[in-house]
Image (cartoon, rainbow, N blue to C red; front, top):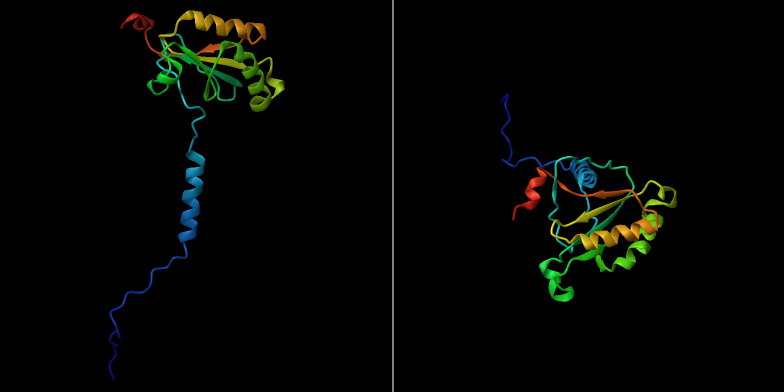
Length: 162
């Protein structure tokens, strides 16, 4: 009799898959918490002007976004190259701003935010001020007086460089 027994075969033991569901769910929860979704598809140019005195909005602020600028190259053959207004994912006329503002307020934010809602204008730096003035006039008519202009941080003299 020998003290040591020889292995019967050189097979490896099977890999335990008991922890596999835990790892899969851990990865699933990780990606669910860190993934963000893009809210709108930008159909207008988004090259904002520079400003040196800026203030960031809180993430908790009730914000309604209005985009204005030259249509992207993909859309210029359909709508032309003149500056346009984009509300959500469609081009709109200035007269549609009031309805859009109230619909967004009532559906996304809630009517209790009527007096504190901020309208953020994301206007391309090359857009003429006539369009911006028309947007602001429509917002004044519905008493939406809290307006934020989206800008890039930098020296404002860069706005005049071509």
